[in-house]
Length: 243
Image (tube, rainbow, N blue to C red; front, side, top):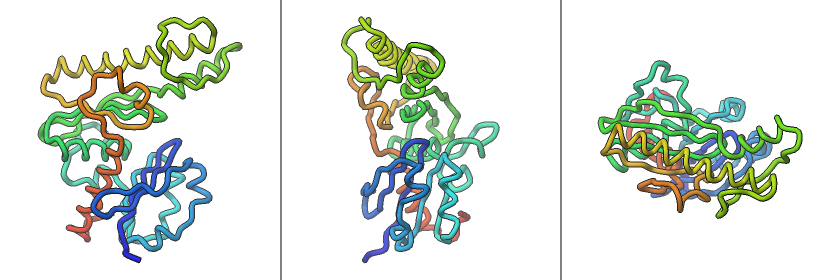
């Protein structure tokens, strides 16, 4: 069997695993808790290299036994710089998204990634990551309402046409759905006011239900895998780069 790079995106809720031929090919999307304990090692044993973006340190420990692993940090991404006070604190997912967006568009980019959290990341036209914003995702917001109120159940948010709900469930769904659309569009507007040339890119599964209503320029559902592929190709060109 041909040995290929394996790309691993470990998120708070979900882990995505892909192989890299010419483009990333997703082979598994599983809960991160399941990945930590039950995902088999055979794929990693046969990989030519393993490129990992992780925001869950406990899940990353399973790669300690391999010597061909690159864990993405601000030190392992060479084609962009990180212009914030503590670059070691930036989530690997945010750096990889910024790398992929900048490599593809070569301009000022705002990357909106919606998963467990919603992040806004700004990388400028010189390739400097300038920071951004982090919000709780809709799932966290819904869970908080359930945790901290006596009568609101845990509600899965789905697209809503009506602005006002006739039941508690509808009110929560409408509030979160329309509220997050306004929040995202409001943040995009603020960025565009300061940086008129900015290209706005959306990624992450949490954006899919909002896509008809948010003012992005491009939807890139596999942006983080594209970023990990770039890191893998850089490793092939510079195999002795520090892991």
